Length: 58
Image (cartoon, rainbow, N blue to C red):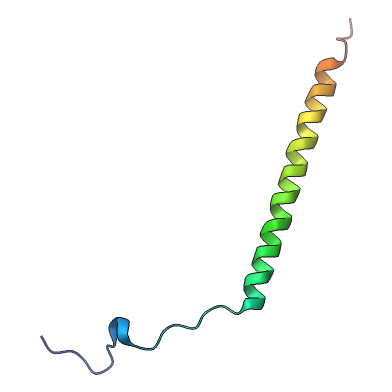
């Protein structure tokens, strides 16, 4: 089998890697997203506890 001249396979030039600035931005947005999700879950659990502690109106 003869290779075409443009096919380099795994030995060719590597693809450009994302810049460290982009990686830091993505990491920061993931951290903020997980923090906000944790806050939402905590507030939901607290509101459920408060609702369950209230007496049922007759």
